[in-house]
Image 1: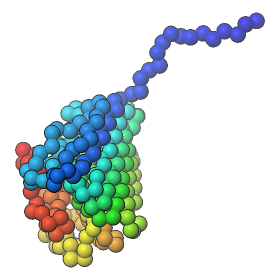
Image 2 (image 1 turned 45 degrees about the vertical axis):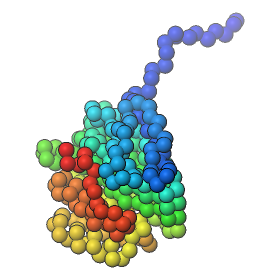
Image 3 (image 1 turned 90 degrees about the vertical axis):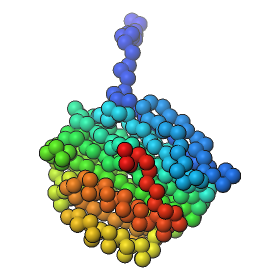
Image 4 (image 1 turned 30 degrees about the vertical axis):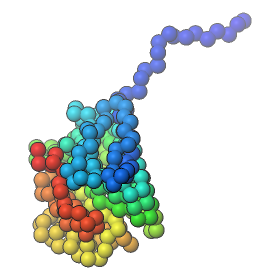
Length: 280
């Protein structure tokens, strides 16, 4: 008897959700940083680079306007060549919507070569009730590289009275300097349990390196003046980390911007010129 393999003739179902990939590379040429590599697929791209400060670009990352749902994937790769400098931000928040069970995944990788500067200033991540999301972010710094950045997580929609009563968020952050252990942390929130955050729906982390004790003292004064419910800052070798818990998103965003504006002159020798998109 001959064995037979019967083919159904039906194609395999495509993976659920879409894949958005963005690869950026910056190089310094003739005294100016240029966006020399820009590759994208899917609904993840950048606008042209703006030069409000002359020698280095402000670049706006564009997420899909409809938001992110379960099964979607975003992959970002940024390479800063030696002596380059770029500021990256976004025109609006990244919204993660309710999922029927599949997980949305975000992968962000930043490689900073010698003496490069990266300012990573995204808008907030908003997790709607029942969203299922994994965000994995990594910065690798070579000797002389400088980093200023922050991340904001919003669980539910506090302004609309929508609590994060169900769903799961798994957020990892790694900052790897050349000469110290750096920072490696992971936050997991599930089933609407915000006890790890003291019950607050908003959490932000600001990070900057290399920083000094004087910079730490200044950031602590800003935190005290902001009257946020819970806030603190510490220095891990030369990596400054400030954390804030809040229930007011506008106050939290303003505080992140103030810390950036305070640290920028001391760390980069530059006046704090905010991206134009922040005022639109």
